[in-house]
Image (cartoon, rainbow, N blue to C red; front, side):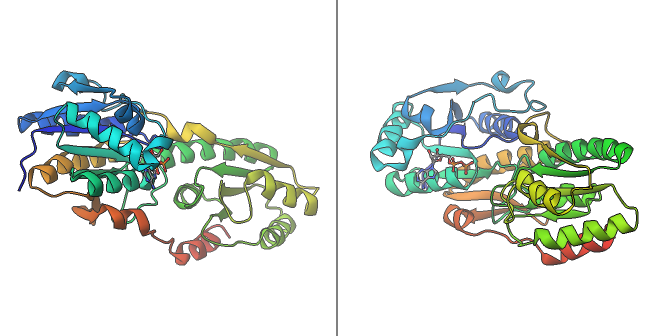
Length: 326
Ligand code: ADP
């Protein structure tokens, strides 16, 4: 088993609250085990540009509660090419780096997997994405914070919707996955939830709204994932307005506020446990895995499986939404 001595940590792809807590855990666990820990700025782009700096324990002081990422994040086209990865590897070698922790989504894991295959450098992935769409873990770093931000916003919108008897179509993030929509929708008592995984006919929603109108239930909230099969909030609202012009229908797109803010307690703990486990894995000679938490226990999944597999929403949840909102 090759012993690691110099490890690097980077945040890559879409940002997520809690990434800083993960960086802190990697740095402090590494230093505890007498490793030299380096930070790579701007994800793979910084690896290609040799933006690699040593980190000390105090470099990560006072960041556990901060959103964003002190290491910054970016997307990097050159890393898709073998030539770009070669350049990145050469930069890592300049610092004698022999182990990497990548905090990001499945795209970032794809890149890490390729590099580990080409250059025999152990890579550990930590799932950092607000979308929670990675197999091999029950939760991803950032999801809980994002969903709580959405819940907070939707609660406020419901107050004003209630005051004016309005229908609000609220768009939350989730291009390919409906977890934010589903969780925020259920916990705010949304009447309808639209996700990228399930085809929900807008016509059925319109019929339901008309029934509600007859019952004098005029306040309705429809939570729409940005990638919902029926389209985003603007499109859903357009169809509703065309069929129900008498309803006072408004659109609210929550947007990037869902990515920011101080991470929740759950995300800080998740990130801390995962960062700690990532370094332990490198020290134990485990490589090319993603650290996940399943049934509250650390679980390692080969990077290539964390890439490919997608979990699916339980249709029972959608049935429940209908019953609870009726
Ligand atoms: P996320 O990690 O949030 O899913 P991206 O899909 O944008 O975000 O991936 C982040 C970066 O990872 C990309 O900009 C690219 O540098 C690298 N990457 C993604 N997919 C691959 C791939 N198939 N091969 C090599 N590198 C990749």
